[in-house]
Image (cartoon, rainbow, N blue to C red; front, side):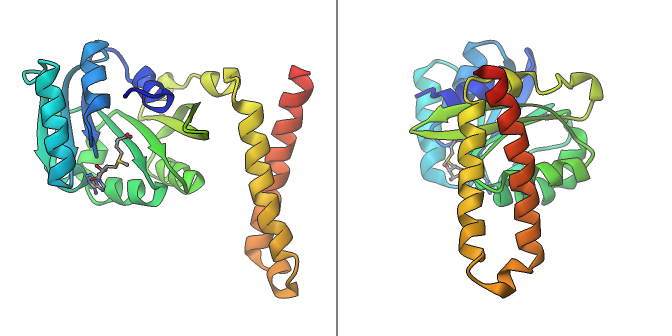
Length: 225
Ligand SMILES: C[S@@+](CC[C@H](N)C(=O)[O-])C[C@H]1O[C@@H](n2cnc3c(N)ncnc32)[C@H](O)[C@@H]1O
């Protein structure tokens, strides 16, 4: 099923891309990328045989065997340099996405666009991308199953930067920022019970994050109400 999360990923893929869908599972993203003409060709991969078999069945049922190739294996290791220009990874933890990208530097250096939907550790992933000379061109928000997810569009070329147009226009932005502040504030409240934790670097780091997010949130709130 194409939920808002997968839909947001699809919308970031430049038309006519050659895409690798890493951890394709059911293959819905791969299938929709071809149907919507966002991709000319997709390599749908998975580390585990059962999900890959499910993807193969769905791809055949959609009549798209000529457009989507399936490969079994870990991360980007099943790709060859030059095969794709865009990599999509969704539904995995941010640390795992960093590891998948970092394990295959030659492939990572060769691609133009990354469309990533981490389940957690979003800031870690963003820092990793910046370290690897990707521009965070835009971020979208999508709600699925009662959770709001960030979808990151990172590109090698600065001219793809759309100045966070999707993020700024998202109707979910206020709710997302409020939830993030609330979650971090809960951690700070817990840490405040221990003098050692209160004087730690972690406490300062989270406090400064809360301040930054609260400022963004009040700007959005004042603008909207
Ligand atoms: C939660 S599903 C996400 C499916 C789909 N990408 C989505 O966003 O809905 C994660 C999939 O990634 C696969 N996976 C986990 N680690 C992987 C890795 N290192 N390389 C390739 N696939 C992996 C799992 O087998 C599983 O099918």
